[in-house]
Length: 196
Image (cartoon, rainbow, N blue to C red; front, side, top):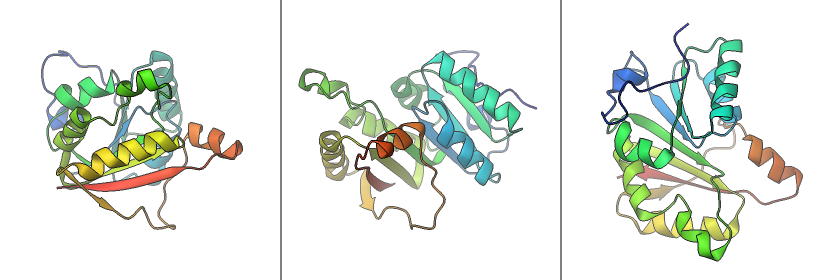
């Protein structure tokens, strides 16, 4: 079984597509800020014909994903322990992913911290860079203010065009955070864009 954790030999060199998975003909999906890997693992189990790369900066979470992927004997999962912005802006190859999932990122709810939110124009450029033409960007949050700001930024960008959310019958598992917020009666907001 190939290694699950993707450890760059040089953090200052762009990855090539084959550095992530050797078969570059298979679609690649990115789970940005993948947390404990609940979504990542379930997607990989459901779609063995696709490859999945999770990006997570916390080592304990990455270790859990590695254990879970090995236990499930998944050959279509890799995880990168690194900051999401750096990975998208620099490390990952351009036009490598057919889909990118940004699910329940830290909303930085205090007004003075709002500039730290991931859905800023410079990060939208990085998302655009790694997606293939007509690739999809899917976003979910329970935080209404963050959702309003994020969708305003993405909708105003010429890099993306908003499209309808997924059909109700399409497989899209909930994350660990989504399960928590749903159990507390929170409303989940979702949006989907296509790369222009």
